[in-house]
Length: 256
Ligand SMILES: NC(=O)c1ccc[n+]([C@@H]2O[C@H](COP(=O)([O-])OP(=O)(O)OC[C@H]3O[C@@H](n4cnc5c(N)ncnc54)[C@H](O)[C@@H]3O)[C@@H](O)[C@H]2O)c1
Image 1 (tube, rainbow, N blue to C red):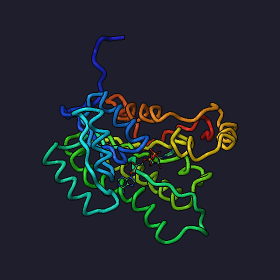
Image 2: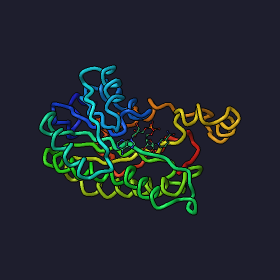
Image 3: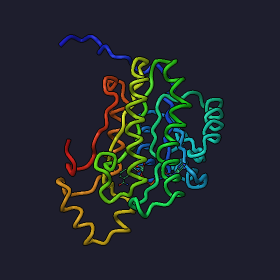
């Protein structure tokens, strides 16, 4: 082994600025904390300014709360411009905001269909469109899209609109990954399942939880920090050769 430095494009963006959507949620706050611990300033995007403010205060000055509805294109454009002026350009974008519906096709109304697609898919598209250009110009960037096991399985318990929105996110990941690859920008997705959130701990009975655990080979639910760890891995400089990948985090429930 020589003592020469590894020959990979290292991060040239000294200011290490990240943007995480859905940052006030269970997974978003875990991702925000992990990036902040890694030296990033993190723009925390979510709907509720008060909740964001409380969470950001707990993390410290590296967390910047930013109330924004990502499903509104004009709002995303305006907020991105203000973020650029106030904080600079981001080099890491984590599209994590998402809403769930378990309604299958025949129970899915028009409004629900549009709402799920606009938050889960359109929001990621608007944000990628705003920030990819700067990453390409600077020759370094990381985009991580939080998908779901549903994107690979047709949705087990998840409904049609949710499953389609996450399937669209998989295609968005591959399309933008191909476009961005020559510019030092990687684009990947994570497909988690059964993260230990209130949806499981509060809304499922102990019997229902037991039934689920029976099916998961590792016999436990996923901790939010485990997904945040995968995000940290994907955004690190030495992950620059991984792009257009969808990483499963499902305890062996689905293997491909
Ligand atoms: N929890 C799980 O088991 C699980 C499994 C697979 C995938 N996921 C995905 O992980 C992501 C995070 O899930 P979570 O469990 O942390 O959910 P969560 O409900 O705790 O967090 C989602 C956050 O997104 C925010 N949000 C919703 N609509 C928004 C909008 N229009 N603009 C900005 N923010 C908005 C919400 O306010 C919320 O804080 C989602 O994309 C979800 O689909 C979760």
